[in-house]
Length: 284
Image 1 (cartoon, rainbow, N blue to C red):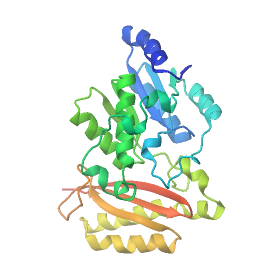
Image 2: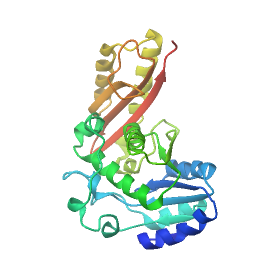
Image 3: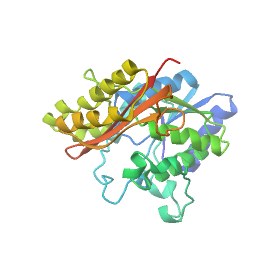
Image 4: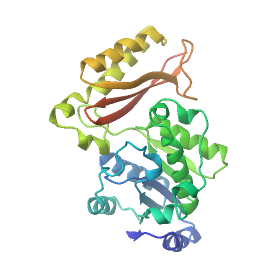
């Protein structure tokens, strides 16, 4: 596996597989890799002949009171994991390479409206940072396919919308969330949980499953279903940020006639903000 820190080196190394007709599959990450990331690399191999990963903790998507400085960085372990997964090339740029004129002077990319709901309402500017850095990475790597997890459903939706709106020739592949045996979605932030919090954390996914089953039994979504689910999270020790049922196709608030739904939630457990989602498809 080749490890590159410069754009010049990245472009030089990508010239050979590109000229040779090899299909590049790209997986951008922020490092601190877990089994969910390994699954992304595996899926990328199914879609490409040359798998490229990146590790970059993007400061532009962190708010002033968020955990940029404390975000877990495990480069040695990450490199070993990517080597084990057969990744061909790893791009590990620094801030000066990604934002050579500084973060404030660089062009921003933002998907209007959808960036400001759900997690965007709680984290102003977060998704602008995500779409800005993903757009830049796409332009540097120029992959025909890129792979993302579905755990951050809103992020995946925004990236797909950005690609569509900007006419980017990148196919976006979404990969189902990888979970521990008790249902907790794997996340780099799970390491912040203490033992008691880790024991309570699976209740987030259990609550989503309970709400999903209620919707299925009713054969439709009723807005009054959400309040008891929010209270269930509080009783389990969470501080709910939001719990919302949306249309899967556009993330608008769901109505009783909608068939393709997604339940999205974010909740604090101690100092850790957990997110999760569950898609629900009702018969016509």
